[in-house]
Length: 146
Image (cartoon, rainbow, N blue to C red; front, top):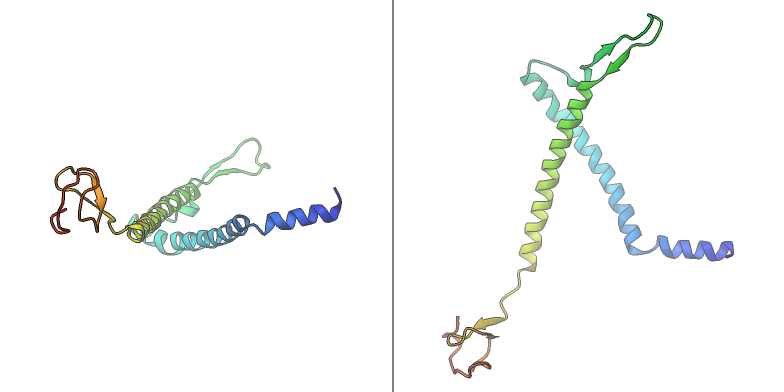
């Protein structure tokens, strides 16, 4: 394989719709993550900290001193973990709401108008404009079939 053929094959691969769509989705997802992170950190956490007595979760940590006084202390930042858990819960609720909304819109758009009706005699599906059932040969007007 020559370099030119490899570059041509890569170009064909990279220009597929699915690869471009994936790249766009990743970029939008990264930016959405920043927005949600800012929402949690800057808008949600201050009132939550205020309600529980002014606690700033990001500063909560356990300090372990191991060995001599010269060694650096080890910190377990459980406050940051609490922030990440709350962040995850808020993101999960937002994603659930977005997916539920998208599914509702999709259902509303794909709801098709009925193309068949039931024969009042044999209950088989027949076209809406039918005047006679093709199954039992019953004759009826359009309004008599449900």
